[in-house]
Length: 512
Image (cartoon, rainbow, N blue to C red; front, side, top):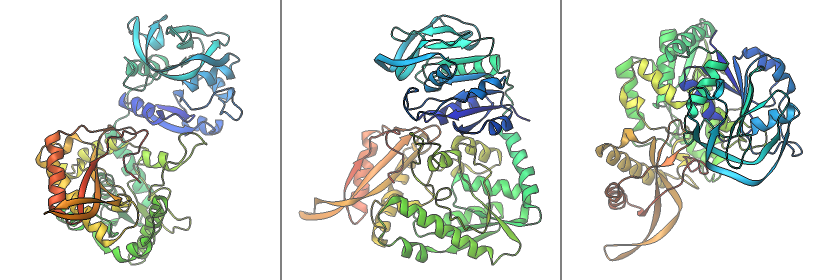
């Protein structure tokens, strides 16, 4: 049984980052909503519990509370930001509104180097984001660190192994933040660094074999790293009982269907069924403008096609999908805070309630970079491992507004040009994602001394570690110049190219 750190989410934008940091240290982590039952918490048998930050004030009406029973489990607890304030209030300390808000970098002075701050220097830069502060400690707690404006920047009860920090050790802006988390995991919780993806693969292979039994399994293959790694993992587990289906939903990139078929039929000898359902998808998407509606239509139609294909294959009971943890987090609301549903992913929020096939989602608790590591272990080629993420609803959510054949043609050509230039310049693997978005407007231009009134394309290029946060990529001017000139000159229907310079948050990577 692997050591597990349970993270209770109170609505922080950084909750997923906490999970990633724990896994970087080779300890398994899992996120649950803060309202999860104590019985569910016990079922994980956690070596430690981390309480995330959140947008509320603990004295607000309806603010989520920390369950007192958590502190009776004899399990170490670390509260971060709101998590600190929540445990202080629950344990009868006091939290009040601060006279001065503290956001961003703050010089923090460490008063106690035992346990949580073991081996750290006397002062570090911490990342603060709060407008409330602890004014009275619960019984048995002592001050561990302070800043000029926050007396209790960190507190602890060493005897009960309960700690709280007002800053965010999980973000890169905090000096030695990973060391602080490491101290909590290994010095306080006595965890062992045993979380290895090789072990995860073997565990999944065994579970899939047991679950599938003698049944055939259908895998929805898109050619991206998630579904590709899932297909190879399933093939490793059940061999010829795996039946992969590639659905042409009409909103794929240029030549995508041909390329995917060539890789899997030629390289892996996997049983691949190609289904051209583009007509039915585009018919249902006709006139639809709302992105959530697009996603749900594609999700429902996707499963309908699979149900139909399943009837053609005997003894089928399961559908495999490459669903990732960020897909689940963004599609499911834990409570009414910033972790409320951001958008429905076609393979999470868009699934119909009456779906006949049962799901197998081996990567449901993994992040993108972890799946890429698994793909490498499984021997997938770099062209798949390093492929930029592509949304399940495809170009449907990169065409803002109505989806038409003309809009698809324009976007496919523009996106293909962008990708070719990025690869030629040696930038493709340096970027997390780079793509074009077709905007729902036209602008006036001049070509050959004639007035034009044509479409606008936006370039979106970002850098990220796991897709949960992202910074816009500072592409060289000469590369942007080549992209813009090539798209405008080669793609009929475009006369203007713009650049998206927003980061996530506040924006998402995809526009819809």
